[in-house]
Length: 606
Image: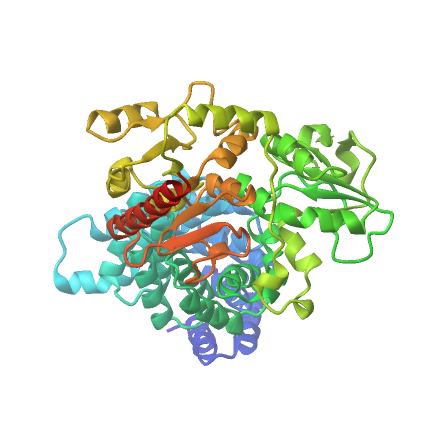
């Protein structure tokens, strides 16, 4: 063994012992004396990288690659260092050279493809990254392997499958990603990252129970892994297991107190559990999953005096959410000089009729953005169509700001119920139309809803599931379902279902003024959790809202009523979110009792 090799071995032993600075000192002295020894240059560059100094490593790694241009390992280490300082495109070029060199030497390696794939991920070239990870797997598991060989390559194969799955998930191919994560776990059963990633992807495809199980496995394997606790909390929230979700988020925040997603998602669990003070953290949604559209550049209202000031209230989320929080607008108007409310155009007339003195308008009547929505300084690019307000506030922030937790004992004290007033002329029109249906109760129903795939799966029902309800005689059923459901209703009637009254000039999705008038004229509304439920509650109609077992946070836990809407009864599914039979049987019995009471009352009057 020559002197250079002995010194390098000494430096490696020092590095293995954890003394990086001494290893660097030995290697520096060696490269000073032997400036063209590729092994010494590479070792020094590698050691600088280990010390977290990739910029210091670059000159030595470049010289090593120049002195020994046919060694792919030197180029791989150089590519790593380039990537660490953000030179991704050059790193890709060098890593590709390393892969080509391995191929030319007849010794292709999975490591080379894995490195190149990771670099392509960082550059956003996902298709190239997927090809690289697939190539790595072909080298690792492309041929039949003995158990001994499989055990040898298991960690590499698991990592490759995990990376491949990450790319597929990012490209929207979630079902394939799930399969790849399972392959990774098949190689290394205690692969915590793969379990965490699998859980998150199962959430996306709506397999919430499986996601919760995978996340539980992840946190058991890696209790410090914040992402796993976050996914576990989210899965438990989707399952309506709010107490357990709260505990998962608490554990996450014990590990990462600054986690905004942890605090925001925990706020919904806390709200579901009745903790009014959680509104403070509910505001963090603006930085986690923004529900307010274009930023205006205005300062946000945080509870300070609004005397003489003009406030812009921003719309967010859907029709139901805007209605639910609208009850706080009159209180805000009493504090401010002027209040402009950005609202869905379909709500404008309703809100104006209900809350005179407050200005309601859709976005394009309030402001526009010059130069597109990607401008960096929005305050410079907003073109105001009203006098520029002093502050803005999202409508969902009003409960916490107008009802501070130290002044609220429980939700009944904190909630200000919204109110909608139907147009009198439209109300008379619907009263007349309904009276033509003949004697009996007029019951409006809505059976589908949910803005996301998971929400639709939880909340939506079919008309066939309503069969126990439809058997009740003495009832005229009126469709309040938005969207084109004419074929669905026709098929339901063809199979023997009762007439479902609807009108060609009635549009429950886009004409909410007419929708509100009809709902006000009905004897009862029975709806799943969608905007119809919020409209019925806000006009004060007698309503039964049918909730899945995993109900949204706003309906809290186990309540049969809700402070948001005093005339609403909440009827909850108690077992599986897929099995509505027992709930509809209960609804049918309730409806039967209600019909009997009305008929008995009518006979006594007669």
